[in-house]
Image: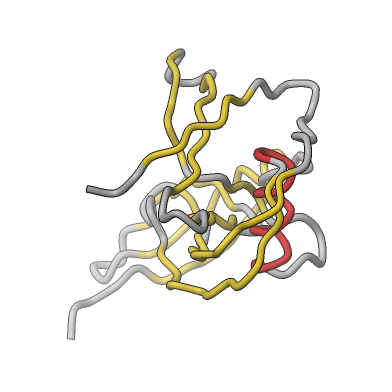
Length: 149
């Protein structure tokens, strides 16, 4: 079995409503002590919305860190006591105006497990009725439709 690092301490360096920036000290198997800096979030949900005609719904939005447009499935952070499925439904409605019909959890993954503690919950859903978008004041999101080939 591989040897692993032993956590000695953990502290939160900065916290805001969306994430925490943390610092741990750890001990290596050889006894040396090191530092580990990382982010931590309550997790996120992403949803693959499918229309009755088989098209999927995507979002197009500007991403600040990359300073470019990004095509994405609707999704976002899990807030407070919200469940992953509630977050997925809310993000879909807010970003696209679509209402979820049937929904199935596809799985869970951790994308950047060396940099951030952030579990991603993935759902696929049939959507029907569409209302208007309910965007935050920092969001400008276009809705795209794609037919899988």
